[in-house]
Length: 443
Image 1 (cartoon, rainbow, N blue to C red):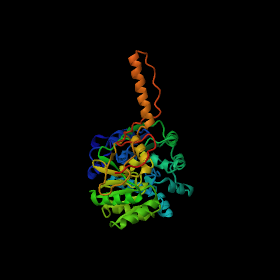
Image 2: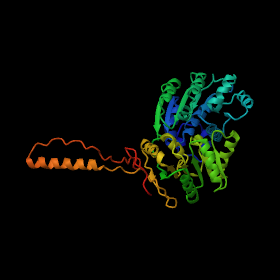
Image 3: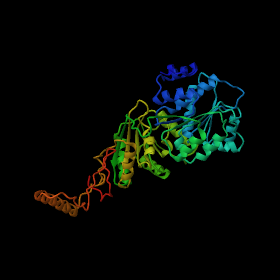
Image 4: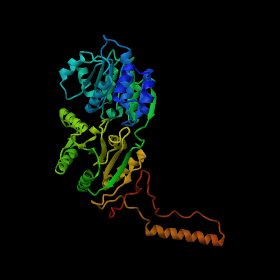
């Protein structure tokens, strides 16, 4: 129960107004450690409630230790405008019974207006590294009074090339601050460098990592022949699956725009979201999806991280994601806390090996599904069979063993067969060849 945590009564009142009574596992683990003043490195899967896990301790400290003469006292860094805006919304929900002020600093908004807001010394700044660096170079930032720095979706920020920006911003912060780092994946060498440079003797918490399967999400794949076949199967899914809202993911902006045009001839109110869209258009699109004004959104991975959309029951990967981590970030848009979801991936022959490696990496049971109304030729790799030469070699081997046994002779090691029959790797829910498949089979 949140009431059992040592949080300020105004925060408990806000949580009660929002209908939150039970903390999620990441909140139950992180909040007491953060309240105790420790630096934290938290790895937890998307949709696990990480935002409240750092906001509640931050707000508790600001309420308990007011300082009206100080400048900005808390900074939250995020990789995208959408995530920053969503975090501001969560802050505003929790500070309703306090005098705490928060401001959003991201690209796509008036620079001078933002500078004027920062001169008013808001308690909390929420922003993206690129725009904050612009304000730093303009002389608008002063973090000498900062008491807490939060790096949220840190793995994504590093993937996007923000490592140097993050380190530079951390360098100008009060060295006595508390730092909390949250990510969905452990990260690689870049993450280790940031942790070493920014955190001090951090407590490490690993809870429901991105490799862990979402128990309430079903994972399916459908094999297809080509892009045209993908589009036919996609239209059938949109007509026959039951969902309130869905996101269709592509790997490129060009593919998202093209697919959006194709689907608009089939459905009304199909919207497209990617990084080249105007800031206001992106905001309006997400607001329409949240409000239920649109049901179908075609998007790149700009929508794959951290966005919390209620009623999102279906995710479709038109393109196989480039990595296992990106797969679960996409799938994690559905099946949010306490709700069921379905993630479907359309897999062509050239994408099979990538999908297979994602399945093994995440240890997911991804079931293969057939859409009988739109059958195709590719149905997964053809199992390799032993050649006649290998079969003949096996017969000779057996004959030698039999003759040796009859003669009472000492058994000698048999010669290695010229070709071994490879066993299919079924880990991950579907067969994967160890050698290059010979070609497609008829469905």
